[in-house]
Length: 337
Ligand code: ZN
Image 1 (cartoon, rainbow, N blue to C red):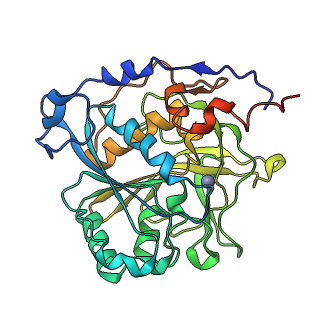
Image 2: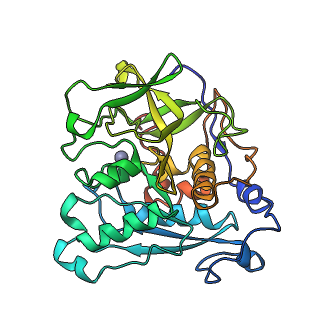
């Protein structure tokens, strides 16, 4: 990446988000707001449930990233946000029975194996989405539940946890069209975390409408080689997986929407860690994606600090939620002498 990168320290962007207009015709919602700083807007908020509690390895630190997701959603003034943390041990799941129905959207910051959730919990989740509940898949949540058929239909594509051609074909965009490749092989890959360009493929979809055609995303894992049924799936944005960085040479889906029954799913492959989540495009697309999943519409404006085709832009206030931030942006900084 030869382009000069300007880091826009965008600490002032909270004001941009807080000033987003809230339409007067929003329906009354869950009045229990856990963290909103806009009490007057509570009746206009959507209830959002973030689920965390497990990942496949210590590199996905949900203990650090869930507070970032919560902050990002609460600052819109559109949502009330609850967090439920699932026990990691299978034997303790018997008492884990969150109520999905009644929430505008469930956000999964969660990656567990197939057998973790009891059948009744999986059934309740399927019913919630099929009957019109919103679902948002963040990064490694598309690794979860590799053998749960309905879940894979909801996410469209996924990776790792021994997925292979039996999960479905690879999906990518070629010559402007969504294309699949059924060739056998594993699912899921990424290179070194570097900034990369994201390109919009469906500019009229509410989540990406008004965003630049191409923008730079902060250093993150560029997910590639994902596989899945791809049913009722629309790819909103792709990124080119560079062979020079262990990539596929394909334009890989990064922002995806799926229809499952009457439920709307927004799937972002972005957001490996706090640093990646501080990228203004992650913030903006998550806020808009959750609103769309919950309501079918997007009312939020694009912040002036949104990255451009040649510059990344990140939120220093969010990046600082990682205790390591004070040591510098390690993956991006040259070694100190
Ligand atoms: Zn990751």
